[in-house]
Image 1 (cartoon, rainbow, N blue to C red):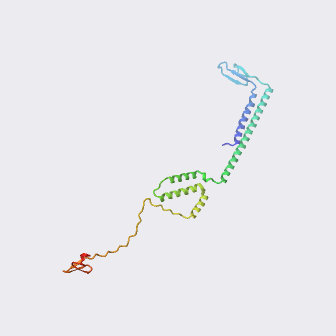
Image 2: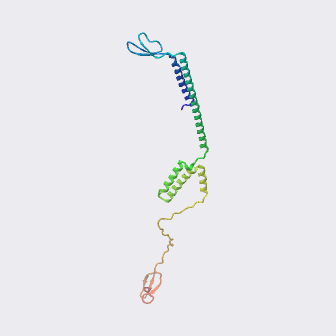
Length: 233
């Protein structure tokens, strides 16, 4: 991008060229059109035509007073052009200086102002991620809780900023931890402890008998028949 001074220099050069051309034009006091009698070629000159050529005066010779007036008018027009270009260059330079100062002021204001984390793009992305995790279903309740906690911490960091997030983490660490045990989805029968295993006493049985008595496995004797016999028991 070119500066105002460079643009003004180029415009001033163009204006001086135009002025010089305008000043040089009145010096051509007389213009003749010369036509070659043999070929018909037409040329223009401010001198006399060649011998044999037909001449025609296009512009009559001007007097010294007319040339002076035209030269003065050209100089005045060139001066007005120079003044206009200089004024335009100065106005452009002032405008560019104001715009540069405004840009510097805005940059200093942005640097000194605190960052608005709550309205940042990172905060919006973290909010969408938290909503997505909340709407999904994990394989277990523990996995879902861990994913929600990670998404919540990321949103806190993105929307609060590093300093506020550190304060929130310190406050979260000081709170007592509450563990919630989710009940099973189906009824569970209680498991009672079983009594210790003990050997049951062996039931007595008849080992031998005589003509009148019988003896059991414990050595007790019973009448073989009648009252008190082993069969009555």
